[in-house]
Amino acid sequence: MHELIRSNKRRSALLVAGFVIVVTLIGALVGWLLGGGIVTTVVALLIAAAVAFTSYWKADAIALRVSRARPADEHEYARLHNLVEGLCIASGLPKPGVYVVDDPAPNAFATGRNPQHAAIAVTTGLLDQMNRVELEGVVAHELSHIRNYDILVSTLAVTMVGAVALMTDLTIRMMWWNGGRVPRQGDHADRNNPLGYVGLGLLVLAPVIAKAMQATISRQRETLADVSACQMTRYPPGLISALEKLQADQTATHSASTATAHLWIEQPMSGLGDDGRLEGAHHWFATHPPLEERIALLREL
Image (tube, rainbow, N blue to C red):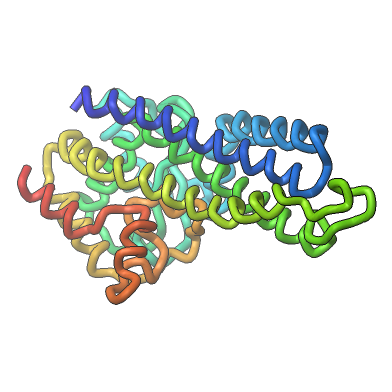
């Protein structure tokens, strides 16, 4: 288990580096596409670097805000706080911030940059549907993400995927304002900007690449968090029962977005589990492994 965690951390570093490279390249291409020359490209590179740096410090707050999470009152949600405190004492973790999301769909996520600066959030639907041992299994799953340092790369991905989407949207809008779309006198030697066409093609592919990276980040870690949660609670049936309830519930998590989908304990967006001609594409872009596979694995423990 410890070797797997170390391997996960190494992959996390590579995936973060991949996101930084993608964001940086897209920023450089935006500069060329807008015809601003080397100065605009350098500015774009600095902005991309600033996004990556700022993400480390503020991505958790952004994820909580985007998900409309609010601090869980210790009296109103005493059961939740007691479970979190008990599991943290047993596992030697500092208690993270505890949040609640007003959403009828049962779901939960963890965010932060390390165990000392972390938070977990659960939906009101999860609190309504889960009994104590099931809720304990879900909380242990999220605390496992914190203990295994999964939250760092997952939280960084929220803002980095958002940065790619923002730059793509900016470039497409600027194309309507003659940002390299047609030749202009004195611009690019009075010719169309060929790099602009290449950049536009890459900008179309960039969100696809980002989503594939995002899916890989989550799928690699969900199974490890499931196993770690069972080690933490020493009661696999609790998490198995919770996952079975999540599998039976088909409600989409309205508080989730494409940028935060990989954070949640199960795929929060509707439509990705559909069968048919696009089943392969759905599987490629799914942020989580199928629940039936996770349940089967836990039954073998």
